[in-house]
Image (tube, rainbow, N blue to C red; front, top):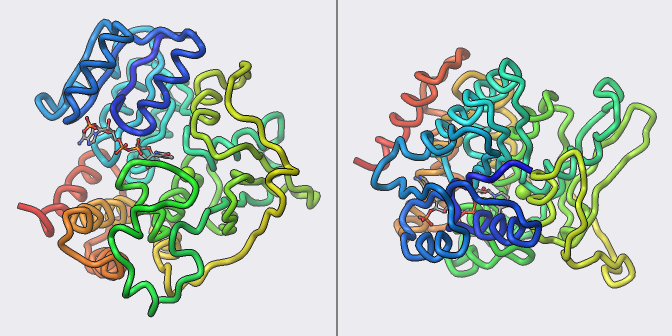
Length: 357
Ligand code: NDP
Ligand code: MG
């Protein structure tokens, strides 16, 4: 296996990628972090990479190390900052394992068409998309009827719009099944995470939005499923542990033995599935509309969400205001049907400017 460049090595996915690399004996070529220099220092002592970079000191450094020769890149950065390094990796012919869903949402068309032109694989780490990729293995694309993305429902599953008015920041940060970075934890609580994942699925699998269904599955054992034209449904299951999809992204299409805890269906007991209240959680529907419009609309939605979640994390707004402000920003923003890197970057900047100077 090619040595790894890990962008965002100090985050939740980055740290778990290093655990997988250690267990599998995969070499580390380079590590990049943003602010957590102390952890980055400890990681580089342990893994002896050729290069280490702190992106807050040099924003182009991420793209530079993503383009190192003869490596596979794991993009575990959070937010739009991951877009350019993804493109740099593809341009250099490096396979990219992507956790960074925001880049796929904002610039998915650009990423996928460049990857196709260069013949570079883009492999998802996100557990739902890893599941879909596993369900699709060996299947004809024309035989796919729809994709069923499962969602845990987050800490506020079953809450009404009224009840969401009273929730605290602390409650929002407590995800029932996964221990993740702050932004994706908030996205899970608003269900924007499923909206982003819907767009991510449209980009990765080249399927239209109306063929992606969302099913709330609080146990997070079925990671997603695919329905085929004959009515058969194939689902992928496992314990909720991100090291599984990370390992699969690195070894795809092969599998390697791992020490990840085994799923016992008997212990799991009851697996349940349900819909969700679109009034309390309006963001997945907004994501549908954005991807249907195309152009820079998904980028607008993603940028608004990134900025508003940052305000929430800084305690400037209440939880129930997140979806309201994101929706209002999305509706007001000027949309265009054309996409280019320039348009996407200026869209991101102009939305951010509405919130921060
Ligand atoms: P974390 O917040 O835990 O980690 C984010 C990483 O990105 C850190 O290494 C951080 O560096 C770095 N980073 C932050 N801001 C910037 C920036 N502006 N430029 C460059 N690097 C930056 O996030 P997660 O690991 O939870 O998530 C990473 C991505 O994976 C997200 O897109 C998320 O949606 C996706 N994802 C995460 C899952 C999970 O289980 N955690 C599951 C599925 C998808 P530093 O810490 O040094 O500041
Ligand atoms: Mg996911």
